Amino acid sequence: MEVESRVQAIASSLSSKLDTIPSEFIRSEKEQPALTTFNGPIPEIPTIDLSDPDEDNLIRNIADASKEWGFFQVINHDIPMDVIQKLQNVGREFFELPIEEKETYARPAGAETLEGYGTKLQKEIEGKKAWVDYLFHNVWPPSRINYRFWPKNPPSYREANEEYTKCLMGVVDKMLRWLSLGLGVEGNAIKEAVGGEDLEYLLKINYYPPCPRPDLALGVAPHTDMSAVTLLVPNEVQGLQVFKDDHWFDAKYIPNALIVHIGDQIEILSNGKYKSVLHRTTANKEKSRMSWPVFVSPPADKVIGPLPQLVNEENPAKFKTKKYKDYEYCKLNKIPQ
Image (cartoon, rainbow, N blue to C red; front, side, top):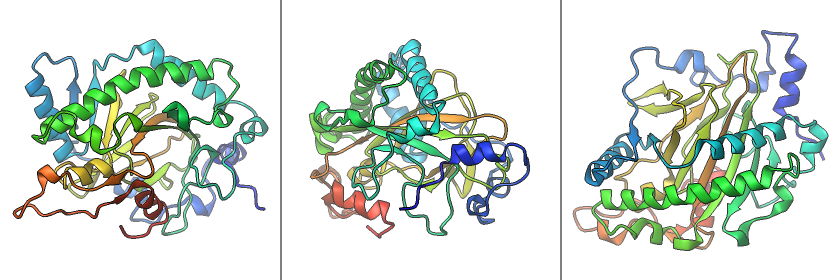
């Protein structure tokens, strides 16, 4: 069996040759960041203050951002900064471990689960590779947690992740409620439709090592998230880009903010009113970029389709109704839905 080359190891080996990367990382011209990133004035990507005392205004802002961008950043989200810093510290310490130690958490070959340490995640149409290593593991509910994929080193890894998850769940509940109300349906409509208390939380740590040619490579290729919603903490190194009006825009780093991506399942439930955001990640020449997305998704057997309240003769269903596991299989294997 061929052992996957980790990007972190490739990056280390290239450090003396500052202007070259292997050809499989060089994107086509229609994807190279240097040629496709918008260089003019960037439109204002929404930043929403969750402490706004006017809830109607808050709901309207979240709904507008979800319809127009499918993407926004939130401040005053009530997750303590020290909780986020601990999450980031233990994640960074894991990626600083020797490669042999990280490999003990490797995603098993041919596994159906996404969990584990790895590099390549899904088929890419042009056969290119992304400039990223990752670690995936479920963080909620307890029945879905497999501690075999949770690093034992650093020793505080588990505690930091559990504390962050507990705080994040409160934000997700409020977000799903506001998204429901923004569609004019009952506040619990979206959460119930995606699984209620059985919602699954999958954490991913993305590690993008310094890249000698960030103008040619991508950390993650353009995609939408198959989740219901994704909440992400980045480090301070710029790299996230969103696609709107035929342009790739840099999403500026806002200290202490959480980034919210509307995922495919909420686009489906909203019958297309909310938009699943197309996004990608660039690399940095000098510094490692890291991010901690948590994908909030339905359980595998949950059937997802447009909310019946939003479908009528004037607005027929725009999406098929199917089990989430079938949607996931098609998405990962680039099979039309």
